[in-house]
Length: 475
Image (cartoon, rainbow, N blue to C red; front, side, top):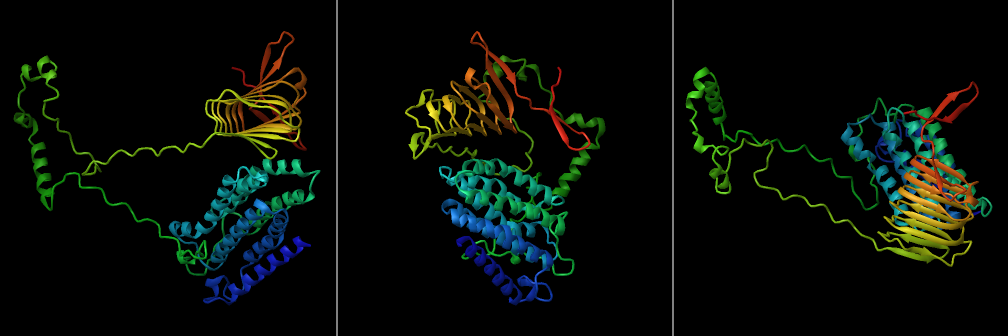
């Protein structure tokens, strides 16, 4: 019932917005065409807002918490893009500088969504936030000519990793989260169909209205004004000759007169004897500190006053964390710590390691899952995991299984060594966008055999479907 009411409220808000746009001052400038009604592609966009977006917002409100707040930001982002579409329906395409100003509300809305996810990494709904944050740049399709549709598809695929995690976590627990994933994914599917029909090669602008002005961009916040104009051109370069006023013509004539002397041009040069040459007189080299400064030619575009070298801002160092928060073990910002140990674990607990560098973590006992995110030169040793071990956005990590593990996932990682135990030889290893992955399998004598995970693939069409196989380069 709550979801239906939220959907109805969303539709009423859109309807009120369309009535206000049609009755606003200036007719077309407020969002209508010459007859006061919105253009066809704006009405089609309203269908997306009233359909999958409204359903996504309603389900987000039902879930509540961070997901609901994120959905409110997404709702504002789609509203900002609708205003841009209204402007495009009644105005001709402006210059690039004006277009950048018109795109600012959508750009700020995208940044707000992504910043909220980064500020709430410890949220229990982090996978939901990540799915939205990874795909929200799809709203930038308005600036992605000539192929906006494929760009939206690429952003939708970027969210698939996290939407799959939501489905995995809630498939047997709460159907609302499963419906939430379906509704959210359908937003980008419908947007691709919309772009294909109305904006195939880029945002469609009016061919008869006035050229869009920067003032047409709606404020990004109620209290904010119009965005500032783009910066002006840089100042012209300084005069290289340094001659004031009209003296440059006389200097130029004197220079050409000297050049035209021909062979006599060298008569003005002064002869230097051997005792005045530093490479033949060691005594002169010892007086280098007292020698007169050597004159050099003017440096183009040099400032008259020396500018102090810009020092790099100090990097912000966050305190290391190793604590149990609810059911999650947080291991964060560890630097050079080789003795990290988590013991007294329970089956329902998970481990999340984030931004650890040159450290080693040992997890004892049986645990639900382990995630290593944005770590460098990290070592992980664990006994048993009943769910999955995930390695994301890492470099040069080593994972050793002492007991059993059903699945290991490696994503966006460069350099990963996985040491399997005899009890974990049947585990599945899933990789995507990663390189330098090696699996080490134990032998009977206790040694390990290192096997590389394929990184290059060959795809062919067999007449019915695409067939992809791993390839090896002989070298």
